[in-house]
Length: 452
Image (cartoon, rainbow, N blue to C red; front, side, top):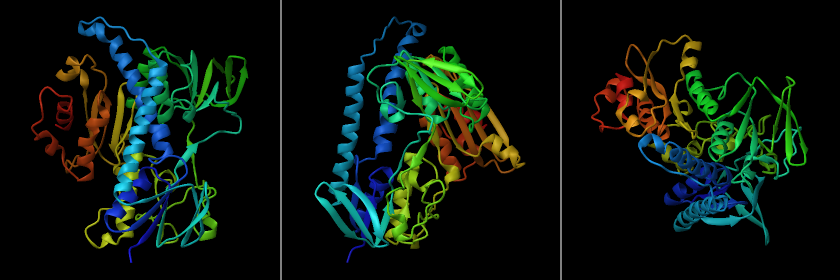
């Protein structure tokens, strides 16, 4: 009899686990209440990147004069909305088709546990009960809304109300300077909005390399973005078409719209964890071990609700590893997920990407490092492209030459970081990058130069 694997949540973790487990012979049922492909993925990640791409093209048009061209760009908001919707539909349809081709049973409804081996889906046709040998909880997260904020979907927005908004704001006040906040700041400034960014710390991206943050701050200033540093938002008030954000230091930001970018909370409520004996921590996350197992061994958690790294790439990998574990494949060679080696990117202009150990982190624990840095201004392809901003920084062990981490700021950083991610994951040395015969002219040449 095949393994009965029930998955609650059809985001990157859930659908990857479903396809892998089904291909290995499991009888898979996936319950999703919103959209196959994942709300966070298709309502957050993909729409924002599609809008960022449009903003990027507008920025490139503005740079055209430096390349001997005359160009102008006009933003068509209706066409932009249609483009975002089309991309979402294509991805949703492709994901659904893949799941159906693997004979995964798709159930539209809200799933919850009623016991350790029983899952109930609340559907339009009533309750449907499933018995399971293994269960995956992959219900994602939703935008965090503080008590002092009351989003109305018109002038005070959450991130999911901004893809795109009914109109491009004249003046947008963004609250939160983490990854989401800076991406929206970049996006809307590129699309023509005046932007004020409320920064609770003394730099944007407070958990990133200070040199990386400095490049982005300079870019924001060049776009006339106003940075309110060291200011923590406390209240939002609306007066007609104006919105005011008051901060704890007495400063006040005025705009036409406000966007909340202050994190997310896990969707663990209503999952029936207590009925199944599954532990949920104080923050609402459902932690798992290196296999993704909760305290109930046959019940797993993955993606944002698991509380590790809130990245779609990590969620997908968790889903694959969990499916393999459910199907007993850990008896063979099995590499566990190392979250310290996950690559991540921020889709601003310039792009930012990093992987592995951070410079400040290494110095904090007294670890010796070899730090090498090469600016893109010395790279021929960046000059050809007319965009020499940013740099490549590589961290390595001075004794062994093993690549420990790196940061890239500049064009195509999200693509280029893959080289360093492979090096960090596989314990390669800087000489392995230096001795690789790379294309010329190419931005990747700066990786070899930084590794030398």
